[in-house]
Amino acid sequence: MRIEYTGLSEIKGSLVALEGVHGAAYDELAEILLPDGSKRHGRVILIDGDRVVIEAFEGTSGIDMESACTRFMGKPMTIALSGEILGRVFDGTGRPIDGLSEVYAAERRDINGAAINPVSREYPRSFILTGISSIDATCTLIRGQKLPIFSGAGMSHNELAAQIVRQARVIATEGDDARFVTVFCAMGIKNDTADYFRKDFAESGALGRTVMFLNMASDPIIERVLTPRCAMTAAEYLAFELGYHVLVVMTDMTFYCEALREFSSSKGEIPSRKGFPSYMYSDLASIYERAGLIRGKPGSVTLVPILTMPGDDISHPIPDLTGYITEGQIVLSRELAQKGIYPPVSILPSLSRLMKDGTGEGFTRADHPDLSNQLFASYSEVSSARSLATVIGEEELSANDKLSLKFGDELERRFITQGMYEDRSIQATLDLGWELLSILPRDALSRVSDKVLDEHYVQLEQKL
Image 1 (cartoon, rainbow, N blue to C red):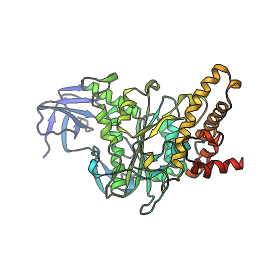
Image 2 (image 1 turned 60 degrees about the vertical axis):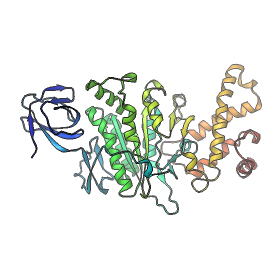
Image 3 (image 1 turned 90 degrees about the vertical axis):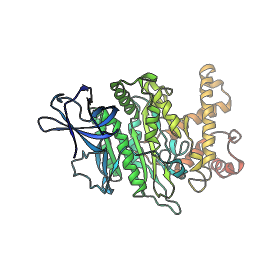
Image 4 (image 1 turned 180 degrees about the horizontal axis):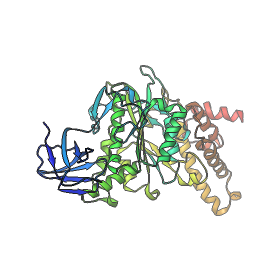
């Protein structure tokens, strides 16, 4: 029999407190019953002796301190899971918002989950094809990897997120299959942005293999804190129970962190860097570390969190702490965006730490690692050639510097620049990379062996 507690001792923002409570547990669900028969739902976030603080999901407006009755449910927050969640759209707490019926619950799972035990982890192998050359060639996404995208306010990260969801796929290998689905999680977005994602996924056919969790900017901030956990719980079920390879795309984690800061402030916690809570690193890790592969399980969870860097500052606490948890980063450049380049992926500061383990012979193509290394090396010389040209003029540059300028311009115009609905195969991407490298003299390609050059560079040279 559940005990009901009448009256509240304090209401502060979305938090309510009551005294004299016994037996409540951290993260336990609670119901607040109002005199008109309506209910507010919440969860326990703080226990201090017999004093309990509850965060109300629907806010505290209209709650009377004297007449409100609180009932503790004896369980944490869970969501319904089954194969029927594919193709469905949910709010930030896992409730359907697509006008269809409730999801059949093959089981219900606690959204808090847990990080994968390191002993049980399988090392990530095999790549995920996004169809985007600047990612597939130089910053390859590997199954089970955590690879964030660092963007800036007003840049085209939403379009990039939609393109990744539309085009991403895995290539079946021996002893493996290509059962691939996506989980899309959006936090703090405006209604028109949510409509854009829903319409784009529906028209492209991606919605049928996607689970969407949408938290609007007008929704309570506490729901924003729950949204990525609901998404990761759904991804874990699809991957480790149903055997899918799951790609989770989250946008925008900056809104999540700001909600965490506001929530922490409302609890009176001592702030850390730039007002964010001191536990933000471990909080982000509790989400990100749920991605990966488990030994003996057929599926995988790959995570691509997208965040906007405040003031384009990569040393800001949000991207800074994210970089310590994840395995690389894809950086979007405002300079490229201002040139009209889409997607504005800045190749040089971007990095995929697991790329070496999922590319090359048996995965993509034998020449892929050499091509990637040479593209990095050759493109890194473009900026110095451009700087020199602004000082002495392009006419005074050496022949090699002029070729370097041409290579940089062509790389940005033909390789990095790509249509929002242009899906390139890995073969087309690699062939295009070699075609662009052939602009440079052969002796300038110092990162590639003669054997590989004989196969690719010389062949192109003869065609030109």
